[in-house]
Every structure is written in C-alpha cells, then in structure tokens.
Length: 437
Image (cartoon, rainbow, N blue to C red; front, side, top):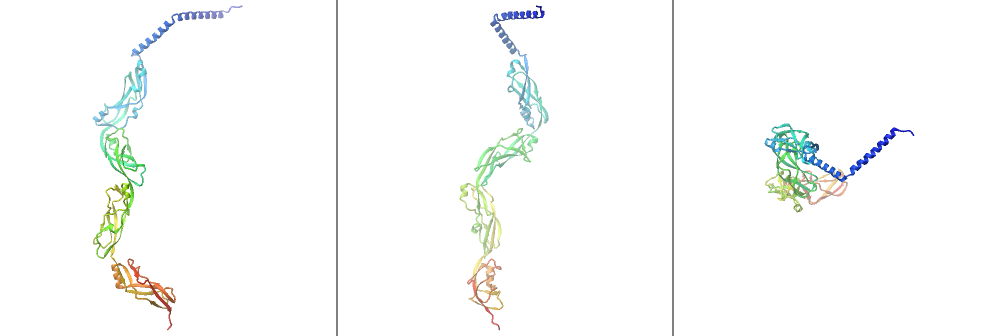
C-alpha cells in the first residue's frame, strides 16, 4: 500500500478542527449564564450611550406636509391683500431634518409645522416669499420648495348688492316672490383688481316642491359684471350667508264684472244711453290665501264716469283690490264704453208698400187694413221713419196666378239698429190673369 501525503494532511486538519471545536465548546459552556448576562449588559450599555448622546444624529425626510399662512394682519396694516390663494402651493411640502438618534422614531409630519409668513411683505407686486419649518425634534436642514412666488395688491373694499334667483321647478298654480333678504348688501374686501370686478352677490334659492312661504339661510356666490363667478377664498366678507324670505301663495284666475252698473257711474247726456261695456283683460290672476280665493267669484273695478257724455270712449280703470291679496297680474284694466242714442219704441202707420217681381201678365189684388209697425231703435232713427215713412216690400218673384200669404220685408240694411215688428207680419195677395182689352 502506497502513502498519499495529501490525504494524510486532510486527516490531520480534520482532527485538529474537531479538537479545536471541542475545546471551544468546553470554554463556551463553562459559566454560560454569566457570559449571556454580560452580553445583555453590554447591549444595554450601548443603547444607553446612544440615547443619552445627542451628538449622534440621523437625517430624516418627510413628504406631503401641508403648510399654513401667517402674518396676514401685517398685510392689512400696510393696506395690502394677496391676489391668489396659496393653499394649493402649500399642500405638498417636503422637509428634511437632522434628528438625534434617540428622537428619530418620534419625528413625523404631525410635529413639523410649515408656515408661509407674510410679516415681511411691505409693498405690492409679485414677490418670492420664503417657507419656514419648525419642529420640536432636531433641526430643519432643507425645505422644498424653499419659497413661492405670490402677487400682492392694494387692499380695497366695497359694498355689493344681494340678488336672489329662484331655481328648480315652480308649481304653475303658485306665486313665488322674494320679499326680503338679510343683509341686502354685503361688504367685500381683498385685492383691488378682484374687488373692483364684483358686481353682485347672487343667491340661488331652490323652490322645487315648495308650496308655502319660507325663511332660510342660503349660501351665495360673487359675480362680475358678465355673470362669471369669482372665487371667495382670498376675500373678506361681512357675511358668509344670506337669509332669504320668500312669499309662496296659491293663485287663481278671477273674471272682472262687466255689468254696466258695476263699470260706469253718472248719467249720460239727455237722450243717450250706455249700450255696452267691455274690459281688457277680462280676468286677472290673483295670489292670496286659499280660503280667500275660494270666496271670490269676480272682481270689480273703480267705476268710470259717463256724466253728460254722448259719445263712446275708452279709459283705464283701477281694480278694486282686497288688502289681503298678495299679488295681482294687473292693477289696471282698459274699459271700452259704447254710448248711443237712447232707444224708443213707437207705432208707425206711415208705411209705403211696394211689390216686386210680379209677372206682366198678372194683375194684383191684396187684402188687409192699413199696415202698422212697432219700431224700436235710436230716437233719431224712429223719428225719421215716422216722418219719411217705412218702405215695405213684398216679393212676388216666380209667383203665378193664385192667392198667397207673403211676408213683409223691412229696410233693415239701412237701419241696422232698428227692429221692426208689424202688427200683421204677412199680407194676403191674389194674382190673376190679366183680361185683354
């Protein structure tokens, strides 16, 4: 058997390692608990040294810290105002700190304050304003961003009127009205260019489903002269809301009386009479308590005078309104008064009888007493008919020989305002063949 030096060396190395391990284990296990306690004491001692020695520090970076503004009273003192809202610029600030090892775990965004301080601003214009950060732990080494560019303007103030616009769906059978706002004017202060552009404070009051009067506090928006909304975040306002008082009442369309005795007063000229009256509009819409509306059938006007008049005319007249009406669609109406001669009735015997349409080969005979007609109409027309007579015609067109009862025809086309009532409305006529001579 041959000798292998390399293999013999590895055996010796392995034996030595086993022997060394055995000796180490013997030493390590001798008084084991004493050694373990010594190790623990060493660790505690090191922790104590680290926590009590504030010269041992670490760097810590905090993200997304929100800052806030200070020193705004200084701006007011110097008659300045901030043009734009810096809130968005202060919502994502990064702060890096140098913190003692002992305080490292306690540092968070909750105990780091970032401020934008305006106390150094003295003049109007666009300026870089530095951000500052403070903390109870460690030292601030960096802020990102370090500063923000802001525009400052002269401070201005003005009073603007309050207006209300009703929105939503109104009930068609109700009347809606804004009776009062409190306040009616608000004072707005801020950057001059913004304040001078404000024309009004607008309240949008929703009346969907509302069927009773109400009073409620409403938010408002600020509008410029073109109706564009202006942000309020950088403005100081004398009121944050507007109290709106609104009247809401049921409505009903009520006719206006056209009875002559309700419309006119006085006496017309001798021999004349009021023939007809008409009113425009014929009815108006009234808003009031429902109980009041239910008790009204028609409205009256303040009568117009016809004293001594002999001609038709038109006039405006006020409606006699009840004090409990909340609203009416019109307070005045147009009244048309037709005045004509007074009507008279008389019997007229002055009648001129004529026959038309008789064939030439026929001869006519008629039977009856003198014709009398009861005439009703304007006095002048009746007097004229009495004087000149009434032309009465009998139409014999297409009639042959025989006896006929024919109606009397009166000149109604010439006397449209006159009625004719004959004592005998028909006439008996006989037609016969003419005897040759």
